[in-house]
Image (tube, rainbow over all chains, first blue to last red):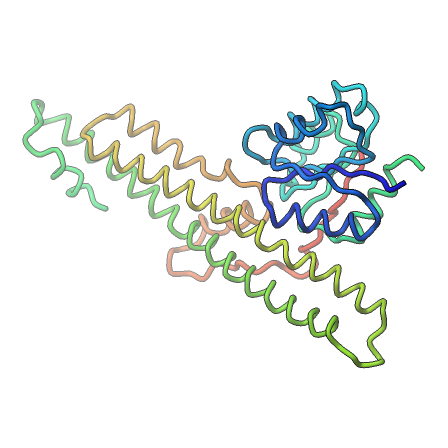
Length: 123
Length: 178
């Protein structure tokens, strides 16, 4: 059974780039435009094997999304990677405090993204 | 924009000949100082967008050539590497979009400030708007934007601001695991 990934980004280009990379690696990808859209898409209790989210998004940003997801039993231990152009240390600290598993600065290298996912996903 | 232009917008509306023209003139001069500081910053940010798109287009072409190649010397590994590079290069759209949005936000703030000045000697409004204009660096999300901003504010307007990404700077420690 293939692994499922939730990809959250307000940029359609970025969503498609991440989805393309993950789909090629065998993942089933669910896309969301922003944090609220992502929360709505997992509200049926569906589990994800990995979440890759942008930071700056309309409606609900990545930090708030992580906090919301961590409240759900199904996402308590799900690896969540922040994928963003932001590289400031204080933002990374905020991500860590919210419950992010890791932080990747855009532009991402597909091989690096897949290796990072392999590292953080339970075998 | 000059202090004279500012005075002309409120001609005939003064009751205090001594202090109001002076306050209004100061507000326009403060705006002029801020504009002189910001124009090179916005110009540098836009130049970097042009360079980013050009770099991405050149990268894309190079890697598409590898992907389309029927040369036996081009291995499957070469093609896989080029596909990764294509995915990286395509992300220029997201990066340039954000940079242009930040330039747009600065121009919007500039517009609000000008409107405040033209309404007359609304000192508090003008102070608030100019303060917001001076904080545009807070809207940045990329180190490159912050670096360009810092360079631009220290350069004279006619100087060429270095906007190219320095070799080896494109992929600084891109992954942090907590």
